[in-house]
Length: 447
Ligand SMILES: Cc1cc2nc3c(=O)[nH]c(=O)nc-3n(C[C@H](O)[C@H](O)[C@H](O)COP(=O)(O)OP(=O)(O)OC[C@H]3O[C@@H](n4cnc5c(N)ncnc54)[C@H](O)[C@@H]3O)c2cc1C
Image 1 (cartoon, helix red, strand yellow):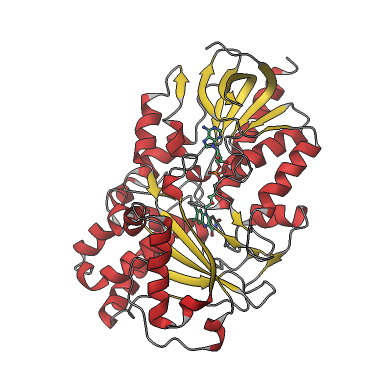
Image 2 (tube, protein in one colour; image 1 turned 45 degrees about the vertical axis):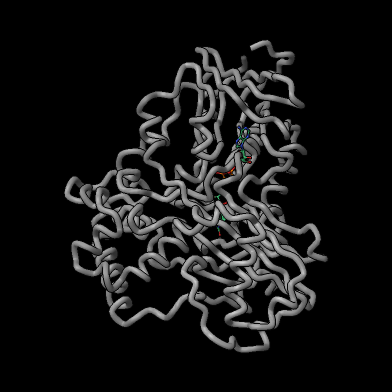
């Protein structure tokens, strides 16, 4: 490549999502020179708060909820003085018919068996080290498991709703062992989704970026990475800046890009075949979030006229319960196969689907619409998916390998953590990558 500029750092971090921001922040805090390279014009990656045109309100197109054991997210929020709120006034519904009794029984059987196995995972922090007797459970999908026990027919609506709502996929693509492992890892006393960042999730990546640059870290926005070249001495990253080729050299690299992006880059030497195979096992969870702002919060004052039946939307909830103003914003969640199907619809057609569903419950709602957005994460070229899920094989065959560095290149991102598809997972993996790089830099001393 005929590059026109060069820049040299102790470490270059690729991707300014939470994983990249945190790794860059930690390394800069240790006084190493760090360049953080980001393709978009903003930091945060899949953290994406919508504010424009909402008259002082905001809503999330990406992550929103924080579990009580997400200690790094909560700790950083405290460190940066961000307001963490609970959800005392939360409003939400599922626009699907109530589950039949047989479905509820099948659902309980699933969790009874999951909890029977959690005690057999000796080391919940590295659950891929399971006894051989448990390994076949990583070959079973949630659907396989239910079929083997004769529970699929009765339980399908609840199994599907769970997979679409939480894992952004279908029961056919979820490893049964991974469900067990996640429960073992989480333990019993975790409150799921109890917290939010009151002023928008984007306040966290913005605070990290500010902390990084205030310490002298260099943030390069609008700089998509195209190729990564590794030598015995260091790493050379080929990017594009204002349309021109731009090269960055560093002693180490942390690649904090979404996993589907990795195989689109040019690697020299090539990524190991084992890593490519492992990446091909990772599950690309699909989500479309549709947000609609209404003139009033009629759902707070009027009971729904009827129950809707739209399995493509697994949940509707209010985004603005902690925000001022008469207006209110509802969020519609479409995950798994319906999200892939909806990807071929225009944004307007997706908003229309959501309105038609809401109209069954609140026939007058259409007249109250102020503005709306619908975001398809699969179509975002710098994400290519919403978040990871574990298909059969990923946990035991891919995850331990993907967590390893390749030479001077370390990897970070939510796909490498047992906080599967969570901001906490992005932070956990990047702390581990930063630790590895710090050890290398310390060992080698000043260059
Ligand atoms: C709809 C949705 C809902 C979610 N809900 C929750 C939730 O409630 N709670 C929760 O904890 N988590 C949730 N998540 C998951 C959470 O968003 C992710 O786990 C986390 O943000 C991932 O951070 P990351 O840094 O690993 O990846 P990313 O945020 O994707 O960061 C990667 C960065 O790399 C950049 N990049 C990509 N390609 C290139 C390139 N070629 N060159 C340079 N830069 C590049 C991207 O622009 C991006 O900034 C949700 C995600 C989605 C999409």
